[in-house]
Picture 1 (spheres, rainbow, N blue to C red):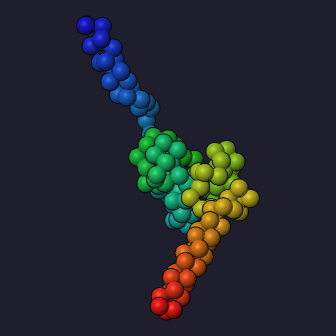
Picture 2: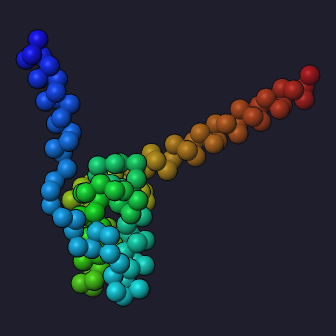
Picture 3: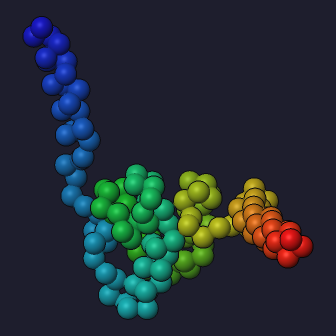
Length: 136
């Protein structure tokens, strides 16, 4: 019985050790001194998905990894790299899933075509129903 209680206690305690004791990255929660660069960084951070939260951008996430990614974006922009090249690097490293802005890759084509097809199908069904009602 004691072993079972100990095992359950250890399993429950594991998430408590998930956070690191490292201090946050320097630029994670600080703004760049150049306002133009900070605007570019914030716009890019709104387009990048948090790898931990997955439903939030790195700008909105409190996850430690999101802070590291904000730091990376700000450092690269401060070094003069363009937001487009940073976004391209992140997509190359993590896949197109990381970007909230759809890409023009062939694999993303269904993301563009399926909503249009559904709209056309819905419009066609609506027109047929109206035509049937007019005949009656």
